[in-house]
Image (cartoon, rainbow, N blue to C red):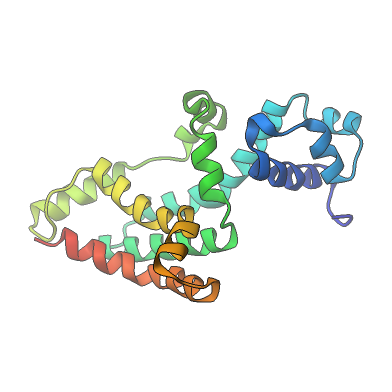
Length: 200
């Protein structure tokens, strides 16, 4: 990581430690060691573990949330949105397979404070998608579905195969390469299943 700036090295190191040990188990000295710097320099950039965790978490969410919500806010047809959402979600999770469990576990700590700190309200806006679901249902193109049910369904179908990968591989007797191919196929399988369920 020598070619990276100090702050970037700290973020990468902290993410690795937080993923392995969680927020409560991580120590600032471990993060400093992982980044190849001394603890005093780490504290110069981040005064506390909580501040550093927020920075790491924010970087993770910023990588994916704006992409996803730009799809929701667009004027694309609903089916196209669902296909694009699936493709971007799978690409992101394939690149960061450890993220679902990390995010899910850490969201249990203090989600309200975390989301306030990250100012996610500025990023998350589902009004356009909500209006589109209502409009499509009124036209008879899909069955009525609330924005809450829509989001829970689509996110669950995308994330759970990554979060529960060890269980699925064991139960289904699937090796790593075959499971990676299965995850890649989720880009089309989820939208097809989802649209079939939405149609009247």
